[in-house]
Image 1 (cartoon, rainbow, N blue to C red):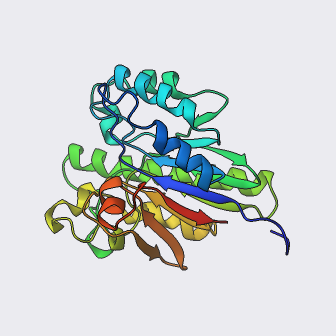
Image 2: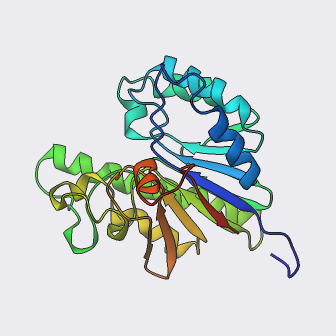
Amino acid sequence: MQEGEQKVRIAAVADIHVKETDKGKWVEYFKEVSRQADILVICGDLTDTGDEGEAQVLSEELRSCNIPVVMVLGNHDFEKGRHKLIRQILQNEHVHILDGESIVINGVGFAGIKGFGGGFDNHQLSMFGEGAMKAFVQEAVDEALRLDRALARLDQEHDQIKKIAVLHYSPAKATVVGEPEAIFPFLGCSRLAEPLTRRNVQACFHGHAHIGVLEGEVAGGVKVFNVAVPILLKMGYQYPFYVFEV
């Protein structure tokens, strides 16, 4: 970004868990987001039980949001196996749901995946033993590779672009601290951090861990933000979204 260029304000939130009874609940929220930011990022768990009726409510509520929206799906959105339908209902020229893809908005590049578990640092699960364990670890490896490819496309197509990663699962132990350590392997995976450092990402946003910490970082100093609604409410945000300037 050249000196004197106006910064882009990104509002980030996760785990909004929209229910079918939420009609009208989010209107003022999305209006406030539109006043304070240029782009809205929602990091998964868009719906509460993975039902298409919940997605339809969210789609209607988002009409009050007049800025571009970038989303990824979360584990709740997969609960009933209707994640493809949820994506179809929500995605339009204004709302972009990323699943291994990237997009450039207002000169900022976004790459998004759901991510997966597997544990952190020296306590990552290894691809050893039963087939079920290997499949679990392979899912995290595959997600990390998809994130890396999405970020690589941004580098190939846009010179020196500022890059933002959007995940549901955490790439860093630091932002899930507070949750029971026994469930850390199901909250995220350090394999997701490798592409962030390799591709010189500006910041990464995620959710999933409701009792975590807002801010952390991974190797190379890449900032990671856990923007789950419960964390932002606990920190006193009247409207639970975090604004980051690029």
